[in-house]
Image (tube, rainbow, N blue to C red; front, side):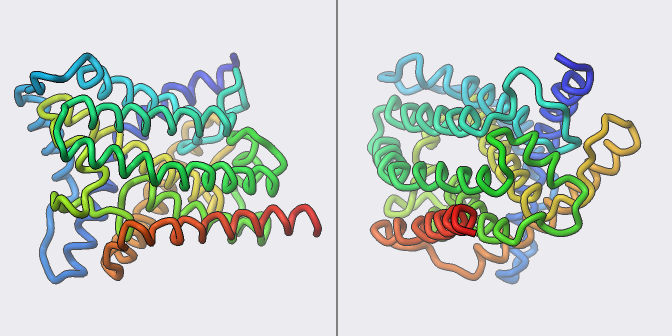
Length: 313
């Protein structure tokens, strides 16, 4: 394993872990401003995590070990995922890290154990959220596979590090078809993070809950870890989208100055994307559950169209 990748393995997860909660707060702030409210401060998410870390953890009397180890497993899976998506710089590929198939399996593992966690508490809310999540996963996961396959078709690689080494530093997308893929990736970002019009993270109404229902029985440190894992998942999907459509500023060299510029560039681009997500959410109402597959099919359509263009062009 080369020195470049070792440095990346230290910096990228640490950067992702520190920055993840900032964009959760920024999206809330933008939504609040769009609704005429002041909204929380940009560091409120960090204060909430600190508060939860000092609270008592309470378990359901019918729960098993799943509810106890899931927060740690989910965070560990997402930290491993952070080795697949370059944020601070693109390292030389090493040890199979960056393989898009493994990346998708890790995201599926996190979703699976979150659903198990919702069922494990034995509550009606948790079971309902898990059931809905798995039903929708049957549609969105094949769509994710097709979307990342389209990305691999365009950039001629199954390794995310190699893909973004190709796009790094470019002011515009290296191929026009990446614009189509980016639409699919944006929809996947909205779906995977449980945002409007798929789910409403700001409500606990029985008829609308999906993601929130699965963690409703968690408390204290466990809830903090699940919230952090969720924020980290959002940041990594944002990173994939940003590196695809607007890679300018991303460095391919493990140089201190270039890493600093690359990190600052990502912070600004991710901030702009968070504002877009906040405005996008504010402009839509939650869709009815049976209409959600049609929303997912938009991502499938644009991804499949990209593959067809690449095959027959």
